[in-house]
Image (cartoon, rainbow, N blue to C red; front, side, top):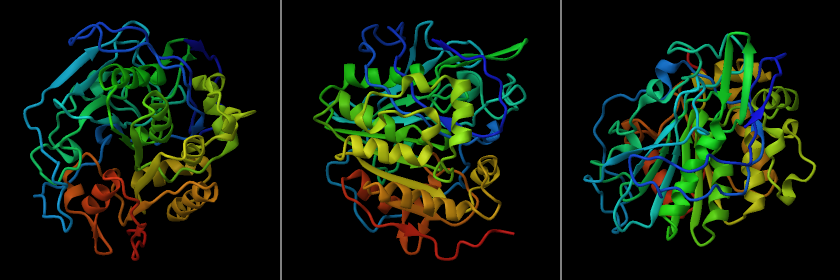
Length: 406
């Protein structure tokens, strides 16, 4: 694992990618569930969202799922019997506090569809933010991050027939490294505090599981919420390289409001040791960590593999993104403008990016059952999402009355 002894000199958020994954697995399943680490590496990116750990995923009001105007595909057969399996990893896969990293899978027999999901939960990049505990800006181990994904809500609610992922096998990657699943550094922030920013080796274990156990996959969908939405585009590109016969799509949930700020990118890139792992793609020739922000990941991945489809969900006044995008120089009135600017940036580089922008201050949509009742400008989110999952390119949906809440 690479080392970084840099100290934070400016607040901000950045992302980058690294080249190697964890090694073999001692799993509660079988020991041969993970293939050798894939060799492709992802690119650097930009400030991750940091949110209070008590609300790492947006809470959704309890609701019943309405009927959608577009019926679910006839091939959709919800599997309510498949069980979650916990997979332990070796010593190279760690959480921020040095504890063991585990991940979870749910296999639907005979399914050739796979969902790779990255959990959200903030970030840390200085001594104050990186303190261990359950009351900081990130969660430093899997136990605090939530040791089971079976929360029975949102896309993980298999009792709702409208769930477009009901017949997908799932690889669920917890988040416990404060680096949006993309770091590879052992970073001392003080004499008494050293953080294992080991997110990318951990995350690659999930992709390796897919290549070893779902080599016949015909559809791979990569997504995540908040900090977990950030790496989705590049992991989609890595998945497409590993499984060239599969159709690959990616959706980023609640991470679209962070601009690409080279100065900020470079500072955090040093703390997380990201620059050395920029992949050997033509689109990245001569690149440094400073060159890449969150919106850049879409067009870099899309231009590297034009067959991948991308989409994005955000709330116009997402309270988490409003608070922390300010660290990258966004004014308090600026989030809706940045959401639009980032879409223009991606599409200006030739990559289509359909977006669904809802009003209000909520943060994330995929892990709450409100996703089945949300409707913006007459378009139900579940209908929009289902069409995207099914291979279509939905039209942009934007709230018309998106005034900043009082």
